[in-house]
Image 1 (tube, rainbow, N blue to C red):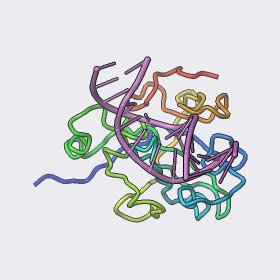
Image 2 (cartoon, chains in turn green, purple, red):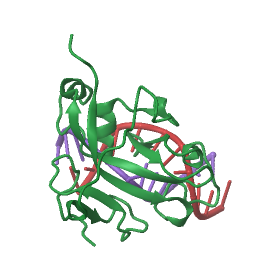
Image 3 (cartoon, chains in turn orange, red, green):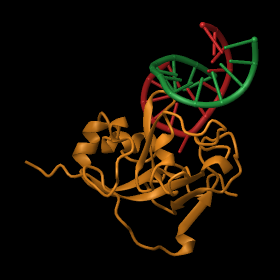
Length: 170
DNA sequence: ACTCCGATTGTT
DNA sequence: ACAATCGGAGTA
């Protein structure tokens, strides 16, 4: 039997800055809601939400308790588990390019809402530095508020990035 | 209570 | 171009 481990390198992210950021799910006067409450908790945990009532998307909470800052994971360069991911994706490629596809391929659902990403079954590990000229910066995908904020960061030339290099350049 | 809309994806 | 599908926000 083959190893069922799935892994990869994150190559595309977007930052959301809580109440200061009109595009954030935490940018309401109401404060925490059932959906966004994970963002108000400790950093290093998963904020999973349903997108358009259809897909799961995952953020990593980055702000301290009470500071609802988070980073949306939008692209993953797969390392292990191609067959498992392909199965979860219903045989469709790309596997992990785009926040909804990525969660489908990794099996991320609301069962992992608030999950501590230091622990199995889903672990976030430190990567490595890359030169500044390898990091692309653009506006965020699909947002209508703060549409000109340069808060999307991606690895130039990576095939797992959800938009072509240069898309939405500032 | 009711409407509109979105941090998406896949099909027509 | 458009459907799927649902929580949140705004309106009443």
